[in-house]
Length: 464
View 1 (cartoon, rainbow, N blue to C red):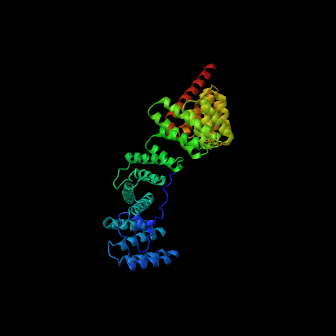
View 2: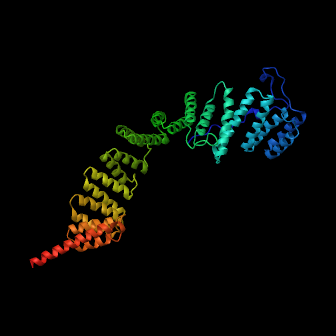
View 3: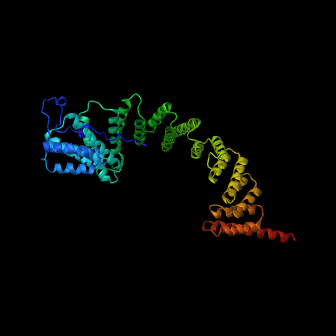
């Protein structure tokens, strides 16, 4: 999960000295410092006791009352809005804090009360609040407006910057990242990712990574998210490999790397690039094995996924080993489908007896499953053991048949006919006809059975 930039700092611009706006050392042009009126100075002084009691509502009432008395555009008004912004923030009213700071900036646009440093702090404050509120907004239009405001104020802030801290770079990158999301850039945006904004996010993230000798994880996580959204999974895999060299104890990195190789295999399959498919799948398997040696990616699902990947590249022997070991140790879920998967895989490498034994084991766990009996019967039939196949099909129908009942009855009827078990064959053919999908084949089989019985009876009569 991506970490948001550091929270809004309690900047000095919100705590003006009573009566003065600028110190002489911050006034290089020699301009006389601005001063608030005596009345406003008294109000600001009275707020100290209210602030100590943390009675923010009372403080806002006092501030708002004085705002109605001062002249619009005056230094008093600008100062009161600065204090109001701080008070709203302490009350956790972030929108109110942002609005007050913007009113202060609007006044400064006309009268230039603020020194360069203080104005930039206010811009950064507004940008952070707008971003944080936008990232949690539920209404798309509101979110778009907040992101646009964050972008506008941060752009002005950047124009006066000589250098950036890692937190600054992370904030800029995340703003681009979130604005790049579908519909997040501005009202009416298309419901798809803005690739140009995402590439800008990646540029700023790289700047952040290069700004530190030991970059923080949130930079790496952000870069991974950007690479993945840009479809650059190969680059993402390379970055994860680098991260795992530095932090092999990270379970999350191992899982991300495994899933990335699986994604690369999927992309290669779409392009019908078989060598690339095999390469990516092998890398996924090796990643899982490396992780498992460290105690990661060893859940039932993880082990199952490894087996499936082996199967996807035709490595049936290895898949059988993983599945067999997993089912015996319960490190792969012991459900019917997994036993059937192992049995089918064993058949692929001509280990029919082992396949039957696997299904027999499954039958013990699922004694009421007719489907398992059907699978066993199929293997026996394929190896020309019709009697054994018939016995298991009898168990199959006794247990309720298969997921498609007519299939079980038709196969049972065919085996019975082959073994000259005519009554059983005839009953099975009629049972199959009770299902819409089995009516046609069941009737044909019934006719064939009756014809066989008539032929047998005719031969017996002629012999007598």
